[in-house]
Image (cartoon, rainbow, N blue to C red; front, side, top):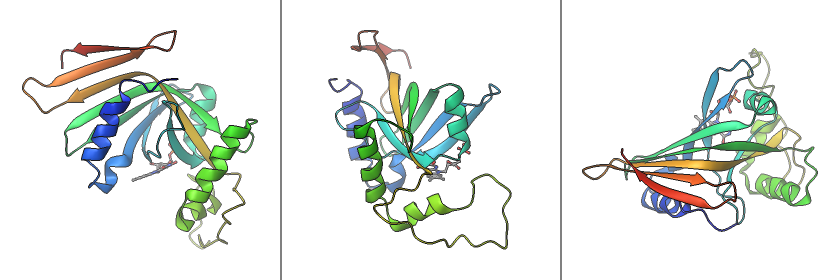
Length: 193
Ligand SMILES: Cc1cc2nc3c(=O)[nH]c(=O)nc-3n(C[C@H](O)[C@H](O)[C@H](O)COP(=O)(O)O)c2cc1C
């Protein structure tokens, strides 16, 4: 699939905001099984190979996994403070877990695991997220090895079907809608901000 037309504005924003360590933090919203929204910060970890899919990592035991088993729709909201622009990406989440039966995706999972810092890997051996904390228990577990991917470690791939790009700079402001067509081509429309 060719690179979507919103990829270069995102690449440009990442480049121009590169001095801000937090410019890769995005908000990822899902829908709870009871229909309520759920939103949290996650780290953008690049695009998956030559696709337009955004890569995130997470813990299999977390609530967002329950949400996406129910239905995969999500929205990512991404603000770049230096250039004062926002991207809202709407699409579907796919889970890559230890159960995924696809060699390329398992390769992606183990490569991503190897690229993590020791501290980041260790989090996947912590006690169940969201459960009542046992204040006597220690979080200093054995450090997981580089080669043995813990079963809790998952990748989320977010496949956008529309992107809304708002640039606050400029008078008037600029807003561009990108929509994916059923044949996977993208249509770009300038809309009122
Ligand atoms: C700066 C920052 C970065 C974070 N990055 C991630 C991440 O990459 N993956 C992740 O699962 N949670 C990340 N978290 C924690 C989530 O925001 C959230 O608390 C956790 O995933 C549990 O969410 P859930 O119960 O809705 O699944 C991050 C939190 C902060 C504040």
